[in-house]
Length: 303
Length: 332
Image 1 (cartoon, rainbow over the protein chains, first blue to last red):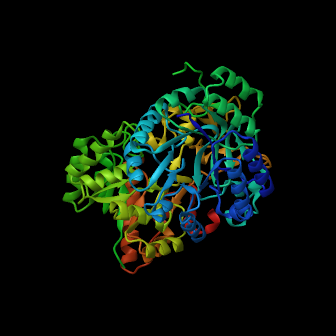
Image 2: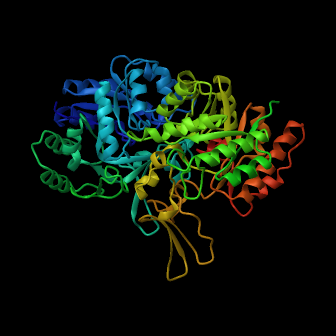
Image 3: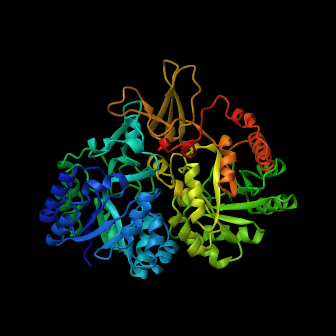
């Protein structure tokens, strides 16, 4: 089986028009098999794009993409609880859950498990599969050895297994909105300041070293994860799905580069050169894969 | 009013005895390995110490809650299974778990042993809590530190299990069980290894002007002037630069301590069954003082008296303290 390329949900607060145009281009030009669509980070953002959802989904499907709907990751207040319950009632599309509240609501019906859920071992995966999970995207921090074990477990369970290979790593979520805090506001009166940072708000250390990226309640890495050099190994392990995350970059080009790598049309060296030519906004990292500091970049023969 | 349990930290056997003697209704502790979320050097229990600790606590009417609350990675599950089995064998009063696989194993292998849902599971809605109750028979949830008192009261009405809330101690800002900041910087994971800002990678760099930069791995977390006390470099308590902010600022939270002492009567009225004091890494003197003060305050509220809270407030004297999310929605 050839590996599938997937496009994860847009985690930043892009303007509705920009999102619509982005997905139109993805539908027409990007060689991705599956597109995850939906607001994962902030329940307050959803009204802006809800009206465009049916059109975007239809456009992607006309472009031959499978559309999977992604859920919120934080479910606390009544509005979010209701949103999750409604989300779990969707039967027109596959859905991906990113919060345990969804596991309650879904009550045994088919679903996918997103990368913000804590699925670190075969027993947890086995339990979830027994309750309807058909597909899992592993947490971004798991190292190579764990990916291998999970791929094997997923295969035995007949569950799809996916790994993020491109884009910033989600490092933490919180109940507090750090975008609002940066602008001396609170979550309730944020005035959607996160919209001004379509690739997140950079945080640097007091020495001026780039460090983290704030996206509302989410904290991401500064670096973009890049596992293009590890794809062969993952294919051998039995990983069948490779996720790229939308950034402020030419994502059609990024998709093309990864699709060529997965299909074996380009080797690791050519792939690295093509990624470098895109002049991405942040350095690339693969430390988590090596069981090391996530921000670091290791070469093909590094331990 | 129900008598709430005072659940106290026991990072070491000595701290366990101190907490029990100071009036803890229950202590929580873990083994010396990655199975618990405070896997710090010099902390935690050997199996023999755990067995003795349980005997000491039980002889004095106190409970022992065993934290097996990190997330086993594939291929390493045996270590967590052994911790669960050892806890059952030693007669601990409950297991505190976060991972679904660990919860499923414990529920199946030891159906009579109480399960508490760790804060690391981040069950922040009645639905999430009810999931763990429905699937694994969880009897108590340790609530994430993100809810207001009135929200806790509402949650209480919708769930068929007990509630434990943090009342005092270190105040983490990220959703527990969903933070990989330490791993990004150090290569050690909070979820997988039970590690947060490990001391082995902490550096205090003295600059020419006498200021001190505190560093974790390759990243400077904060800088302090010549006369200032340099704080421990925890990533979510550091100062950083952002566009539009003139100076480095606490992008997540100030180095601040949670203290819900003044909310104690309200929390008890809301039906909270247990209050948790954070601090398995703290000294015996600290444990004695904090546990003793909260013991007094809880008993006074139960007796219908106004609790003397001055002692509790003084515990964080010189340090900033907060009611965190419990006080107001504006925290968010």
